[in-house]
Length: 87
Figure 1: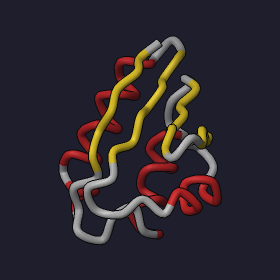
Figure 2: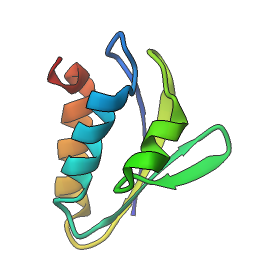
Figure 3: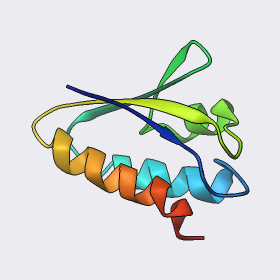
Figure 4: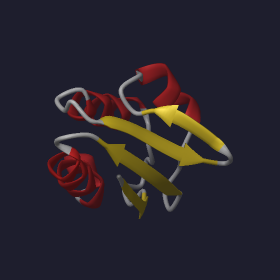
């Protein structure tokens, strides 16, 4: 299981378009992918849960990824977030 923290670095935070990109990317992988923030743990493959995080610029999110393709999944998610969701 991978436990990693990452900060949201795009100015608009985890808004609708960025959330959709994250969810669509997470759904490509078999691994379970969860995000922990403000004592809530949500499924990264569910758009409503991701949107309800309301994570703004600079927010630190903790990702938990577990499954047979966890390393590949985490690398792709980390790259997406680190690159500001390519916006």
